[in-house]
Image (cartoon, rainbow, N blue to C red; front, side):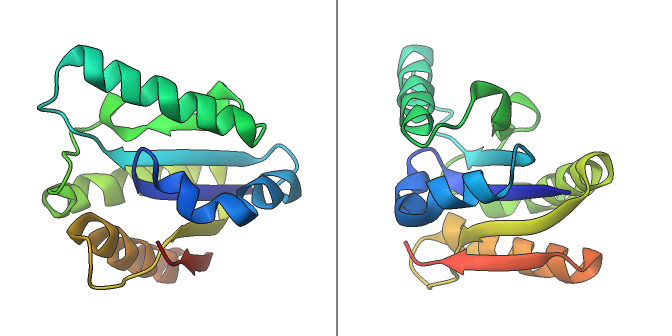
Length: 140
């Protein structure tokens, strides 16, 4: 059974920083973190730089590169337009669930602030209900 942390953007891990290390430790090696939307219109150099920054921040929490998934390597999810990719994200998560048997999902709250944060929160709420997965939401 896997613990999944799914976040709308690279750098959103800082909203979970007080507990991310503990979530990772308690998962006992059955842990994955997914980053969804990226600024796909930025230059390739800037996109690579942002990913490197994310990977370095994950190292602070002792999270290995093998446990990090950049969703844009699988499907197109653009910053500020995550809602346009919800069906594809949902299908990705369904296949992911069938492969890894997720038992917990952590993500950001629905707060009425950022459209990507809110869209992902609603998606995760619906997904976790369909598959009877425990879900935990954090304020950003």
